[in-house]
Image 1 (cartoon, rainbow, N blue to C red):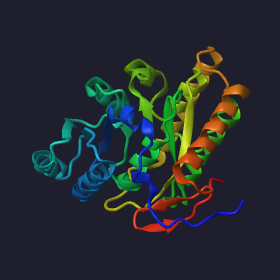
Image 2: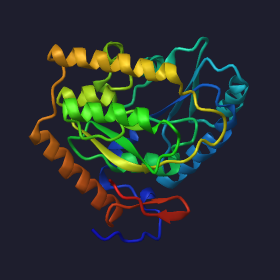
Image 3: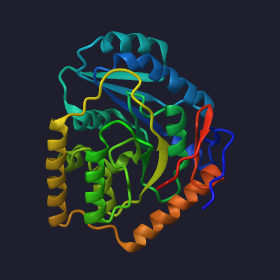
Length: 288
């Protein structure tokens, strides 16, 4: 398939169904991300300006020990869309999800990143534009990733595709999810890592859209060997749900629906073949 070159950023042009997706809260977990917070809010402000509407932003500080609390106090006074909740002690990503569910009242949650490996100027419009009637969750799929965590991520994604038939390449990244499908009880059973696999295994429609990956803007990754071990434990939990019949393989009908949905998304979003733009420059990245 021939790839055409793009000459503009198409993602600020929302489809006709975008009004439905203005009921979205942008949830961002943060742990010792003081060097990223000012730029993150600046990029979010630019994102909302391009979209033509502002979304509420819930930033959950998971017990940072740097000067993030002081920075967030200042940013909360500056940005009316920003609400900050601080954990006194670290609770992990699953704990952040639970806090978000206790406070979010919008129809959808956009799960973002504080390290700016995801640029909200491209990624929020991309995932919002990917919505189609019947879709329950949209996953971002990192392209040209180079953060050193690729191997562990690929193992988890391949295992889920093999065992459960889920044709999603990047389950543990940015995502747009219907709020009413989520609960603290669900997270206790599965944790955050395999949330999309469980939703798909329960018959919900999950699709994906390719997104640019960027190097971390500031600070260090929190990924380590402990996370790899916990990921393995979480996968065993997922297997347990499968053996109990609480999640099932995605059947061929659902796979076809997902494939057709993804093709529809790419064509309607871009008007070009499997390519997207980063803000300020055109970069062609294949889907596979």
